Length: 162
Image 1 (cartoon, rainbow, N blue to C red):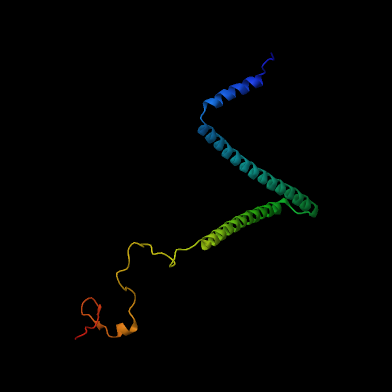
Image 2 (tube, rainbow, N blue to C red):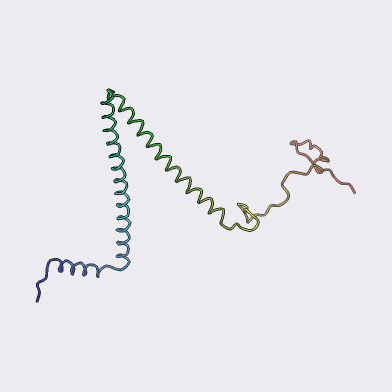
């Protein structure tokens, strides 16, 4: 018989361990590891972008320094320009983020407008309680004949005598 290598022994031991765990727990572990993997990839992409930006800044600084040295300028002004450029980049990134957020809100608004509305337009917040009467403003013809009530400044309706 062939000798068992350490890799085959390890694989058999993993198979034994996996066979003891329930399917739900295995799925849960898989999904957790998958989510963790996605987060790590996102973080790695962000770090790579940051490295690229910093490399670009470094190249720009070196080129600016060479240019100022050739022109006879001092290093004092160089630091100021770099700070301004960094601030401009930060503001541009912030503006891009706000534009993305604005676009997302616009799409949400469009999708909300496209959803079917209930018949009769907007529903009252208390749809279970119907109004008891006409509580709106009186028409001009009704308020012309109103008399002043001596108590609490309320107007009384005129009485109709039959």
